Image (tube, rainbow, N blue to C red; front, side, top):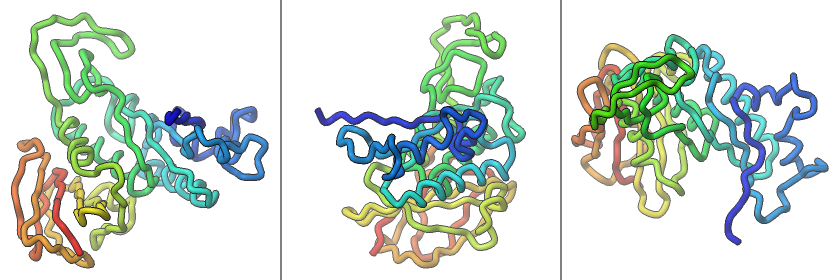
Length: 284
């Protein structure tokens, strides 16, 4: 069989980062499965995927934890030196996290920007090679779906009574995730990227975040920029030589849903306030 088994999954990044110290019978599972001298080493089994998975639930109560838990996971896996990847294998806005609650639908840009920040941090700081959202379609009054159906009037933790009216509600979270999932495709390589003045990840989390990905076969470059601020941000490209004179852009904001446009590749770009923008071009 070509199928593989993914072992070693945790319900939250903070348990993965802290190696479940409060659970001695399950502690340091990363070392148990992936250190070559461990009695549980799985690296020699051909049907075991070399991956550690965990969920982003409850792992960003504040910006410091948002950054630190992902940094800890990345450092732990890089220290193994055995090619083990990290997957973020499940997330929705479940609990109270850094100024946002799981309960109550939010079809607007606030939840979308929050989601984009979590995706960015898992990819760019945690080095995740896979990122998975919990639920595509939801009937609930909860931040667990990308698309919502009918009207929900329930309490958190219960399936609400719904009126089946055939109405479909799209959320900005759908488009925010699309700024990544439609363009950052399997096989791409993430490359270093930073915005001057926002090189500190904690400062960037409240301002401007950037990540970049390249396809080594097609020479395509994908750059995703999140502007959390209330003012537009001007950015000049440096360190990348675009061969395409025009970049394709896709913007998600309070008024746009992956809206397509173009911008010259050689000039200063403007990232709108409270928006997520994906840039596509070719490089050499």
